[in-house]
Image 1: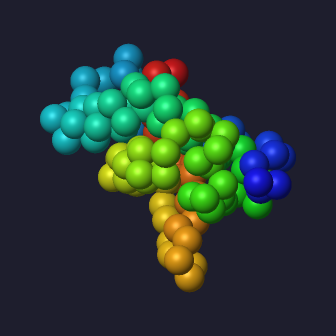
Image 2 (image 1 turned 90 degrees about the vertical axis):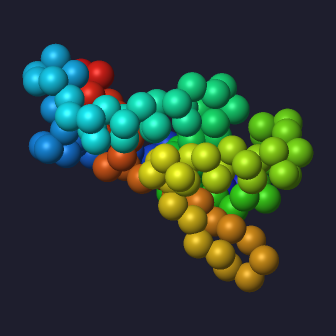
Length: 117
C-alpha cells in the first residue's frame, strides 16, 4: 500500500475555459447534466474518499487492490464505486495483468471546481 502517500499536483490544473462558474452564465442543458452526473458521483462519502486516495497517490495512480483496505469496504463494493467515478469522468483506468490501475482526471476535477468558483 505504499502508493497512497505523497500529495499530487491536481490543484494546479486550471478549469477549462469552456465551463465557467455557475454565476458567470446560465448553464446549457448538456453542461448541467454533465456537472450533475459528476457531482452526484461525489455525493457519496466512500467515492469522495476514494477519489481523494487516487488523486493524492504517489505516482498519480493506484491499483484497485490498494484501496480496499483503507476504505474498509469489500472488493466488489470498491469496484462499484470505481465504476461510478469512471462513468462520471473523474478517473480513468487501465488493466495491467489482473489488476486495474486508476488515475484521477485533473481536467474534470478542475471543471467541477471552476463551476463552483
